[in-house]
Length: 269
Image (cartoon, rainbow, N blue to C red):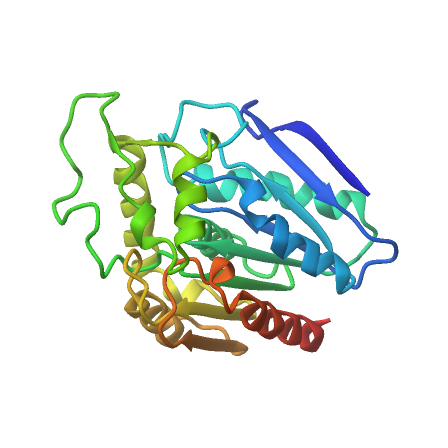
């Protein structure tokens, strides 16, 4: 069963929310997407999770996709985990005691890690894909905060690095819901969030599966290596995939990655 609606966040900003639920699910998966993209780019992954017995919940981050909010803009990095907290609470309230797992890609990876660091023990496990957690690849520059007039935007130049599959790159470029501009305020805030994560790794204690493409040209694999080493989780796993780019869930070998995720989920149910 599929359903889509607008859900008010903690400050009243309405977030586009979808659920793809199965009967008597093994567990519940909440997906947090990356910078400039939207929840529909996880349709295939959602389908595979449903086929394996998991209900899936997705939302567009504020200022992205069909959610409200200034386009591709955060006034504070806490907006990311605090929006996610509203979604997690909604999912928990709709389901009686089922386990909840988070999956975040890239900026969504930063989102789920911020959530776990702020709210230890609230979910049963977290999965990251190409997560921005340390900023080893200074793709947005190396001087922060970036000084610019309020409301300044720069072009989204992420496209060529997202995947090794030309069809995925073309679809990304032509997708009307993929944002073509990024606010300087958002860039400054996702960087500030990373700095906070670097200062508080001991507060992250949740079970976690960290996934990264070895040839990721947008978020360095070193981000995940450092994060894995520094966090306090007793149950932590790391997989680095040879020759894969940023969007490992869109690479030609995506079914291998999905299989690894499903194995980890089965162990944690």
